[in-house]
Image (cartoon, rainbow, N blue to C red; front, top):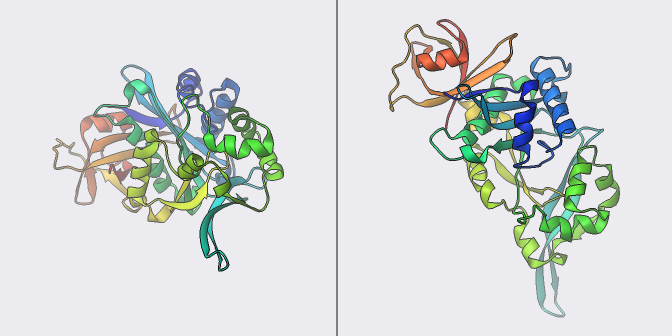
Length: 343
């Protein structure tokens, strides 16, 4: 049974290897930056960052028998502050008509926007390529565990949850949107701009056009990709849509990828959250028993948080889980665990 848990400082080498798969702002392939992200997560899980909205949480999926980390994901309690605002491009439409020419046009228009008290963001989802396929569904486990944790501690997060999805990128990792748009206003290539944004987005505020920009000035193929996701991200987009996320007519100013949002209380997994005591009798699971993510928090120890994918059955207000799941969580009869549907 695979175990979802909070990241440890000792995970740095394994996360560095994973970061090479997807070198992103949330999981950069840079040891110093990655070490800082892990340190912040460790302090967040331990409650050593006083303001809950300054916290960020990194989860890993581990095969305990082999000591392998199969993937990672993240929740940032608030993405967008006065010091480092959440930056986006609003996508709207303008219509124009000339009676003299009898010509009618619809134009996509981009305008820069900022959140200084932004939403909670989910991100940093990376799965080891060798582990992506198979019955364990590591990507889905890593994605859904974030909603389990937010359901357990809703007061630590914002009312709105944001997912910034990856758009189609070139084989060499370049963004056609950035080459046609951002590079013209900054003189930076995509990778350099991405690295610089990790330290701050002041250059975006100062150099991007402050008014409206007509997307029809961009190459046709770039226009078609605005707000679209890449092939490898389509599964994540469908899953988010299924649990309540919607495209909010905003795109990333770097790559044109779509912003999907949902109200925390309206996410189906959060609505399906239950907190129950563990029953005495372990479950002899069958396919009739629903699959859940079951999680528990502990005040101390190497793992502050642990969760597993398992089948469960609720009887008389208590939950029965297989003995293997109880051992993996470190719980016994009468202990309280949290559940969300694995759906």
